[in-house]
Length: 447
Ligand SMILES: Cc1cc2nc3c(=O)[nH]c(=O)nc-3n(C[C@H](O)[C@H](O)[C@H](O)COP(=O)(O)OP(=O)(O)OC[C@H]3O[C@@H](n4cnc5c(N)ncnc54)[C@H](O)[C@@H]3O)c2cc1C
View: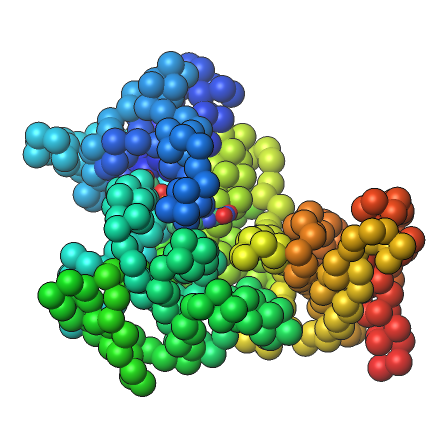
């Protein structure tokens, strides 16, 4: 069986590992345009902030490791076209410029996503940075010490984390977003109000509800213009989201309108010999039961492994995702799984939500701190649809609990009665998850 893998960060690396572990006799060729595989971009902001022990440890595999498993690694090779009818690909060797073609029995399509770069005036400025891959990471890190001020555009997870690290390093930071709140797509306002207060307390200027219209280099920096104001800094960083990098298969397989490729439960596209995983793929979003685009490493890794499981015969189905995620900002843990109230509204899903705030462990302890917890549920079926947590205590694993509740279609009533332990070092007789579920139950009973 001849397999071609296009792209090897997370989805491609995991697929290659799993395919060759299950089928050491397969002929697997990996085409990757970079000279590395498996870069953990989630470490970029931490590296910029000086929290990474060794940047080489931001890779968990290598071309050599995949070669040792039996793969033929074609690094610095870019796939330039795919003909799904003839099962042929065209490739450019980026080191020599040579053109070649190759054929496959099955194609593993894992070229991920590309940062959104709008065609604005000045967009090609060398003082404008992106934050996606190893090359971007090195540029950002090399400039981290010399930069005194930065404008970060995009207050999603990536922009939020970079802005935090710059602020903690004492730089003058402006964080811009077209939406009216930071992390607006991840959390409801009660949490984002607190996060915004943290940024302001650390001297970050928040320019929310402002849309960037252009860039202009100055003698020693860059000016970012929005529809409301202008900001000048040493550098600007653009982190406004990602698009699936799927043009090579355009009109050849079924896609969502944004280009994310649709799959069945076994990661097969509408052409069953083509598999897709990671940021190029749509996900089955369990809270709505619909296909959605949620580019996360967690999805890429699991879907990549599933390709390996299913490449010969469809055996193991994808369970879908709740988009479970967490971030640490200014010493606070902020974590969520599933729908927020606003996310439900945006997707036309009927949802109710409750919120509680209480000390995470008993007040007789010499120290404790509050946890703010919210739970979103379907008022008709009482099923859990989402949950979010904010605290100085590490409450990140609560998001995983909510993820399991959504995955298993638990109701708020069942979640309220799950057997969670109590021990005063860790929680209250009723843990904060039980409490918020009981609050939801009480609200639903009144409705
Ligand atoms: C700064 C940052 C922080 C993040 N933090 C988190 C986090 O904390 N948790 C989390 O779950 N997710 C996080 N993510 C998201 C996560 O990194 C992505 O979901 C993940 O990288 C997707 O993996 P992938 O393999 O599908 O695609 P990609 O990472 O996009 O990799 C695709 C690979 O394909 C190669 N390629 C593309 N086109 C071609 C071609 N034509 N020919 C050959 N090779 C090609 C590319 O060079 C690349 O190596 C973060 C992302 C960023 C940018």
